[in-house]
Structures are given as C-alpha cells and as structure tokens.
Length: 101
Length: 192
Image 1 (cartoon, rainbow over the protein chains, first blue to last red):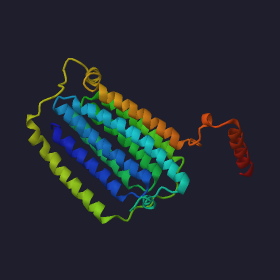
Image 2: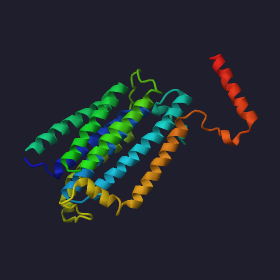
Image 3: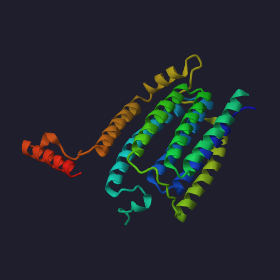
Image 4: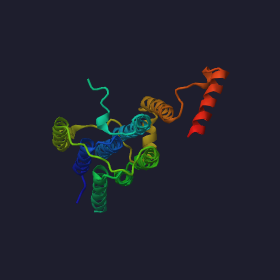
C-alpha cells in the first residue's frame, strides 16, 4: 500500500484538531502553550509532506522558520508567565481579564 | 510496505501521545507525553526524506523547548490538579467550524494544486542537508538573518522577564543607591 500526500494531510488535520481541542478545554496557561506547540507541529508535518511530494524545498524552509518562531514564542511566553505567577500566584486564564473592555 | 507500516505506527503513537497531552489533568504527564510526541513527529520527517528537519525537530523541540518548559514548571505549582474550563460557547463553535472547514480544504487541496510547479526543485544527486544549506543561504538568506535577530530578541526578553531585579540598572545608579539596595537585601534576608 502506497502512502500518499493525502495520508500525511489527514494525519496533520487530526493532530491540528487535537491541538484545537486542547486550546478549547484548557484553563491553565501552561497547558495552553502545550496545545499551541501541537498546532505548530501539525502544520510542520504537512509542510514537510508537501515539500516531499512536489519535489520542492520551500515547504521545509517554512518548517524551519516555524520551528524558530515556536522557540522564541516559548522563551518570551514562559518569561511573561513567570512574571504573572510571581505577581498573582496563579496562571488561570479566567483571571487574566484586566484588559477586558 | 515498510513505509506504510512505519507511517501507521508513528501516526498512532503521535496521535495517542498528543491526545494524552491535551486531556490529562497532571502537568507532568502532559509534559512527558508532549516530549514523546515531538520525537515521534521527527520520524515522519525522516520517512519524508527531510533528514535535517528531523534532526532539528529533535534538537530544538525535545532538547530546547521541552527543557525550557521543564525549568519553567519548577516555578509553578504542578502537583495540584489542573482545572478545566467550563467552555465559552462562541469559541467552541468557532474553532469546531474552523476544524471542519480545514478538513474539507486539506482533502481538496491536492486536487486543485495538481499543476503546481516546484519553485526550488530538489536535485537527486545531492543529499538533503546540502540542498537545505544551498537554498537556505541563497534564496532565504534574509529571512534566516531576521529569524536570528528574532531569536536574540526573544533570548534577551526571556532573561529580562525571568531574572530578578532586571528593572534596575546598576550602571545608572550612584554608589549610595547601590549600597542602599544591598542593605535592603540584607534586611530582607535577616527577616526571612
């Protein structure tokens, strides 16, 4: 049985849906970061698969930049999270409504 | 044949790990499941012939990002159970619609995109790492440098946010103020 582009795209969609589920049901901000990582990884799989099946390296290049952005997002996000935790002693999303209009 | 076996095995493992990561109520389980899922994802990159991407996935995600989360979790109380959100109806409906729409688009995309031509076609004679190097340092040199600057900015931001007393600058203070700061520190330590 031949594994085609469709297989990888469907796998990527399933992983992306799992990530969206995580974004929907998590209350803890750290857990929300985990769900975001899953979303980025799902996209990376489809980039690599398309890059392979069209014989084009652009997809892999995009995947590299996505990884770089994910790494910097984690650094800044965790820093902000630590500052928030020092100040309020919790990281629940529902309490972060100071900017609500 | 082997490709199919490997694909289904790693697909099952990845989905199971990520499902555990988003459903468990223990932060440590979620962290370990996520790290395992990241490593399994690199297997897909190796199957697809993107060797360098697979190596970068292991080094950056399982090495750097997961270690950063592990260190970050030391600041938080991870022993307590994670409470779940009751759910905002609008967000759930919006995201579910987005997911459903995405399935349709993803299944339809290869049919529409049959006449796509490769912008930077891969050459069969060279290895993947060499190809990546050649494309990255010619066509994508400017984005590469911008990404490097962005990582530097993120690193400095992380240090400033997580470090202690980063809002004070010792070089801008005079001697008396520095001595006063030290005294305050000593008093605090003596009290605690």
